[in-house]
Image 1 (cartoon, helix red, strand yellow):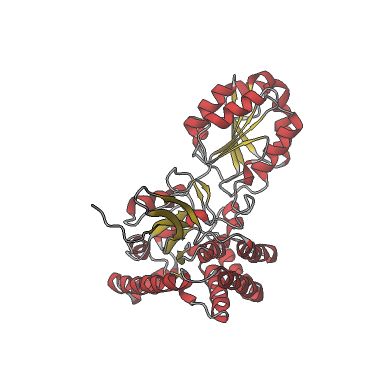
Image 2 (cartoon, helix red, strand yellow):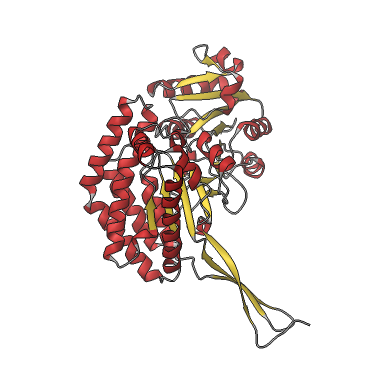
Length: 440
């Protein structure tokens, strides 16, 4: 799927939509959704933990109960995507099966089992005048989410927003519209059963480009979170008039240091590169220390050949394995989302760190090493949201980090960084207790 598909609106539904409604009518519809979300957020902000957890359990039950309906809708989306020639990695992101629906339900249940951050008093200090001044964790309010063709994001976003007392308005990609519509219907059925406002979660069904642009300017939103390719994220950041939490693409590196255990390194690279190629935490770039390159690269090639992974390497690596393709400058910064990986030989951990900090996207980086000093240097100096020693980058995930799910992986440095779970969807307010103080 092209990175701006969500803004392009080139489906037949979009064309029909354009013939029915003008921009003004679309804005009115979005305003109604925003107002309903604001009203719902006021209710959700007052819900106790027990009620929110019950709503999550009912939503999970409704997802499983509506499994056949969701799978049928997803099958239509997948078939249409394949007919349009969508890349296999992106089809994999779009596709649902019974296990993935069970995973969505399990994610909601895990969120229900997490500690509720809302209402937590972070600090409380007494001033010399007797005032007690503290900070209390509160919901953001209304969260907007723009994302591409990953239907599981629909359930994850709802679950995390709901647990933190936020209403959410979703705009998914046109390729997943039928899947998202079925998922949201099931969730709303579950909420209705629990006596909770259905407008806690709403889906914008228009795939029109202008509806996306108007959504980015909807004054009811307290924050907007884009999740998808670099083009989508850039478009949201540049066009939004509401605050944006920027999620990022993943040019993730694995550096095999001179002291690395070869078996461990090969296992980590195999997992990071080939377990699932169409995800942002997959490995896209390899760095290998020059002192072990001659012994390690043939083993690396044999492993990657089994998965039909193309290696685009620098000249030093190609002198050892001539069958590697030649890398171009643009390969060092690429997020392939494909069975392709770049490879560079480096002479030191410091050179590896410099290369990573120049070309990475601030997502996830790992070093495979037995040298404690090099491991600490890598952890201290690599600039990324998640930095690993002797583990796959594929663990950068809200579920794996124990957050139950994630609403995205932030590569910015303000408010939230890395997998965004419950805390990233909260703000704070000051609470002050006095006994009649007045300022002099």
